[in-house]
Length: 238
Image (tube, rainbow, N blue to C red):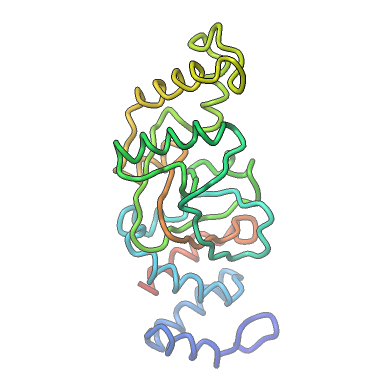
C-alpha cells in the first residue's frame, strides 16, 4: 500500500507502535480508509480522537459523534486541533459589560462562564455561516449548556432587541444602557438552560456552549462522503 498519495506501510507500523494498536487493527483501519478513498493520513487524528475524546464518545455514542459542527474561519487544513479560549472572550454582538454579567449568571447558576466556550451546534447549515464547516470533538472532560429555543445566542440577543419587550428602550450603548441590559439579563435568567443530554442538544439544532480545553476538527467538505468509513475506523481504534 505504498503510494506518494498515501502514508507508507512503515508509517502505519509507527502509528501502531505509538498508540499501542495491534497490527491487525491498524491494517483494518488502512483497509477501511483505502476502500472509502480516504487519505490514510486521516488515521492518526481518528486514533487521537478515539483516545483523547472518550468522555464525548461515551456520551453521544460513536455512531452519533459526527453530528456536532462548528464553522471555523481561516481554517488552514482538513484537520485541526485547537485550544478553546476559556476566558476574556470578545463578543461583537454585545458590550463587554453585558457579556461579563451573563457569564457571572452562568457561573452562579451553572458553575462556569459558558459564553467563554467552544460554540457549536448539531445544525451544519447554521454552523457554515461562520466559516469552513468542521465536525468537532471535545477533548477530555467537558461541561456544556444549551436550550432548545436558542439556536444562536447572539441571534437571540438581536431578536430580543427588536422585540416588544424592548419597546421604548432604543439605545443599548447610550442613555438606556442600564435598562437595556437589565431586561436582557432578565430574559436570560428566565430560560431553562440544560447541562445534560448532549445527544438531544445535538438533535435540537440549538447552540451548544462547551467548556473544554481543546477540540479536534475534521473538515466536512473534504470528507463529505466518508463519514461512515471514519466511524468504522473509530470503532476499530477504540
